[in-house]
Structure formats: C-alpha cells, structure tokens
Image 1 (cartoon, rainbow, N blue to C red):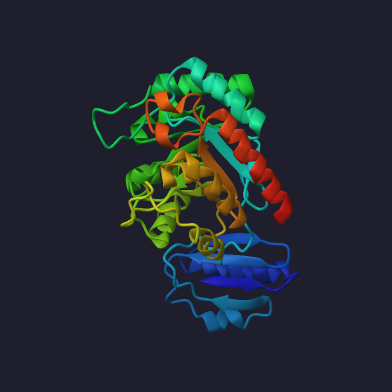
Image 2: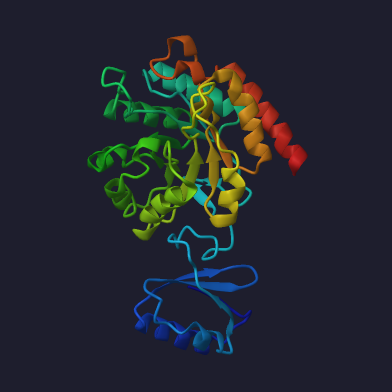
Length: 333
C-alpha cells in the first residue's frame, strides 16, 4: 500500500499516523521527494482500511500495490535512486562505465588494463576473480589471488573495483571490494541474496539467462528486504531461439524498468552479443535508450584471453567506443 502525504503535512498528525500504522503490524518505508512524501507500507495490509486513511487531512491519496516487489518498486520510491560506489555515483543522471577483462590473469594484465580503461574514461574497474564456467574444465579464475590483484590495480589507478561473488562462504575474501556482482547464474540463488542483503556493499545484480523482468526485480527485492538498498540492475542479454549472437540484448528492459523501478540500469553489451564488433553499436543503443551506464569487457590481447576472448575489446577499440558514447550523451543532453 502507498500513502501519499500532502505537501507540508502537519508533523503531529503525521506522527500519529505513523504510530497507528506500525500498530497495525506493517513497516513503513518513507521517501521524501522534492514535491511530496510517500509512505510505502510493507507487510499484510489487507485489514487496513484505505478509505479511513485517505479521509485524513494530511493524506493526498492511497493506493494498493499489486506487484509483489515493494522496495524495488517506483511507486514506493518515485525518485531515481543514486547508488554511490566508493565515490562513483550511478543513476539519477550519473553515468557509469565499468570496464576490464573477463578474467584476471596476472598482475601486469589487470594493472595495465586498469590504466588504459581509466585513460579512456571508465570510472569503475571490472574483473573476474571467481569465474562460473559452463565447463568444469574451463579456466575458473585466480580466486582470492585475483582479488588481491584487483586491489593492486585499484591502488595504481584509484578506480573502484567490481567483481563477481559466487558463494556466501567467500564473502570475507570480498571485504575490500567496492561493489559485488551477482552473475546471471546466481540471480535466483536466494540464500546468497539474503546474505548480501545484510551487507552494506553496493550490489550489481545481473539478469538471469531466462528470467522475466518481474523475477529479476524480485531478486533485487530479496537483497533490499535484508536492509541493503544499494542495488544496481544489469541487463546482459537473455536466452532466445536466436543463434547469431551469444544472447539477445533486451534493450526494451530499459524503459520497462524505468517505469517499474527506481533502481539504476547498467547494460552489458559484451556478454549480450558475445561478439566484439557488435559491442559498439549496442553500447550506443543502450545510451540512446536511457541506460545509466555500461559494462564492457576489455583485454590487451583478446585472441589470447583465458575466457570470453571473442567478446573482448582491445583498449584502442574501447577508447573509440568511449569517444562515441561521450558524443552521443552530449547530443542527447
């Protein structure tokens, strides 16, 4: 249930309303916007008389929310959320670019790439330390050692780091990581999401391979219900019948999510297409569609990459993409 208060509502009456609502067994999510205050009632609201609340002098309107996600719902939070990742803001007009290799391979590789993507305009460094792979024989990443190398790259460049966590048991190894990524395969790993809900770290939540937008938002709700509302959504392509690309990039998710949720939206054209030459046009399309940022894989020598080489850009190609993104954002401003 959503309760919208009138502008400059009487403080005493508001306090009485809050106490009465809490006595009904619901929790209250308060969002104070530029023009109005919105109270999101979370819990069993079936027995609460909406007409009684709407009749109060300080109440503008009351609406019942049918969607099962509440904290991620724009109706509960009308303004766009802005997520701060160690000083880098995402959402609400702040555009972020996360770039780096699919897998961390050695110190020279990750530090050099970090310097190159920063010079090109990226403001976050991504890199895989723990790698979920379809084949048990494929490269699985450097694990804790990979995180140590990411930290060295951060020290060398100042870029906040983003890397994937696969298991709640690994959480201690990620204590110094700036943003935790939940990969597509773990989007509905609810036990992991519950644990991340009790952390204070920003979470990048990738869409599952065959997940609907509502299922994706419900996974965000798991994290937010635990108390961690620092969630950023990442569209990375969904599985369809098409085989010309690795996945099908669902750019229509941008306006749909913008309507349904207040959470920032990142687009990953690298995993979506699986083909390096398609990354640039899809990155441009994402910017034009209103995304809050991009995640792009960059490798100094894609032909020798230990994972996902065909979708990685060289640093020079990444710089070219960033120049085009800057021009496009300027033209759309």
